[in-house]
Amino acid sequence: MTLPTPRRTLLLGAGTLLASLAAPGLLRAQDSRRNASAFVTHDWRDHFETLGAGAILADTGSTSLHYWSGDGEEHRVYPTSVPASDELTRRGYTEVVEKKVAPTWTPTPSMRQRFPEWPAVVPGNDPLNPLGPYALYLSWQYYRIHGTHDTRKIGRPSSDGCIGLYNEHITELFSLVRVGTQVRIL
Image 1 (cartoon, rainbow, N blue to C red):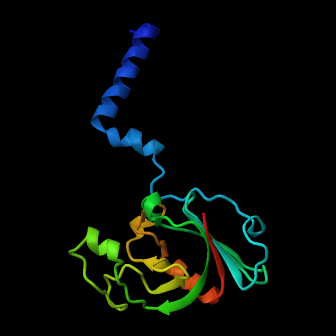
Image 2: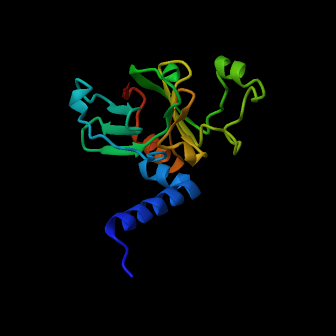
Image 3: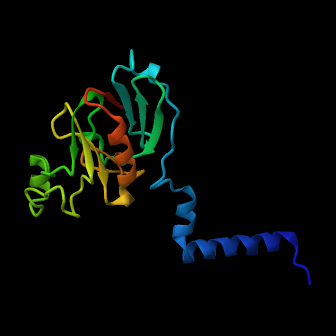
């Protein structure tokens, strides 16, 4: 026996409602963009007058980092973690002032106030070090572009101010970047 169309539509709608009540995460997952970068294409000329020693653009809106070599031959794009809130985000122009292998992590004074249980220092060779294997130190105190062992952070606003990369990506970027590379954080 065939049901009339309005009743069939009503039953299908009820099935969808029941499925959404049974698995509400399924509907949210369809609209979720968590842990995925929505890369935006950038041209270095829109942000820098010259390439100089190279240029890095960290786009916090699309959770991506663009790198251009000084000669313009290399252009790389990487997914990133970005600061968790606007209060933690510093935007503008800076530069790479130091490169460190196995950087020691020292929480900032504001981190220590918010999280007094955190250690005062974590050595660079410690597997719990949140900076990963490499860090690019910026001219702004406490701000870094670094790796992370917590890959869940990539593609999300999750940091206390730094730009985080997968460890394999910071390894690659570290080999390309020179001290003096200009950086813009959007």
